[in-house]
Length: 495
Image 1: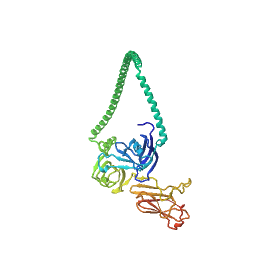
Image 2: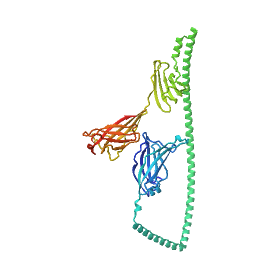
Image 3: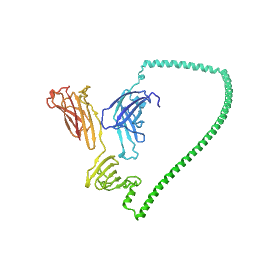
Image 4: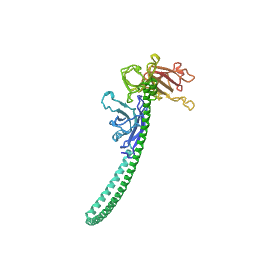
């Protein structure tokens, strides 16, 4: 029920594979909230908000308090299909059970598997989040105040009971009141009967007048419709007559032109006994027609299977189970081919993968090879990471002039090539310390990079392990290294 006092909070949850610390929403509810403690979530990924509906997904949430209380698995209500917004109203019983504790929650989205096949099961688990449940202030009223309220209500109860007693005594002597009430009732009945009689007369008068007005309107409308219909009929007839005359004129002109051509053709044959090749070419050149079949007669693509697609001539094709395909598979391709025999140009789009390739064949069958035209690059953008073990981050070169960067990592994939980038801006390090933990397998292989340090120090080293650990090593004189010394640098490598 939308009563206008809902306490709604909207948060964004990203569908991603990176484990991050539990997020404190900064939201709090009270144990007396009832049907008003509402959480809204916007679900999104790298491409924007998720498109969701009750037809294709099942969304639900689960909550657990620090004191061990837990909610049921609660279904989420879809609020905005196109912007991925879902909503949940926290149950009153769970809020009361979680009084004065932090609550951890998590949202789950599952694709509805209509076919029931296990390989079509898809469930996305979003990152955990925290909020707080407080004890309502009214629950903290002192015992003394509660006793005062009880005494006040007892006194009120005694006064009400006295009023009831007085009313009962008055009713016991109420014969005169009854007689008076009967008299008033009779007067009321007579007055109502008179009002009803007058009302019937007025209503009948209104009905009679309305019938007269409606009949007049109907007569006027019938006359207008008849006039309009006659005018429309005349207009249509005039237009049709004009169109027929125009068509007849065009047909007559075309017939005359054809007759002239036929007469000329017949005269040429009569004079020569045959039509020379030169005259035949001249006649054909005057006609506009497609001299090569690019598609089927209905304009659809020509279908081919189990052939070498490099041998196809000019046309538009749909092929499958063929050889010399761009991906070396037997899938379905849509082809555009220009040329035959010597030079050719072939444009191929893989129907399922939605990837487009180009190939050319030069003189004497010299195949240049397939090259992909589609751009299948993905980029995570810079993702910040936190430091651990007392190491400070993002403190160096952060004034308005230097505009130093933050601790962050990035993954760019283009085809079979993966580019990884790492930025380091840290201080308060010790030799050999693990100062951050990135996602496992961020670095496919063990990596070592030289990192910038203060000018009065020798170069430091940053190690990146396949497990995601970032280590700092200072190989010269570790006693020279102090807490205010820093490391700063950006590194790039390819898998």
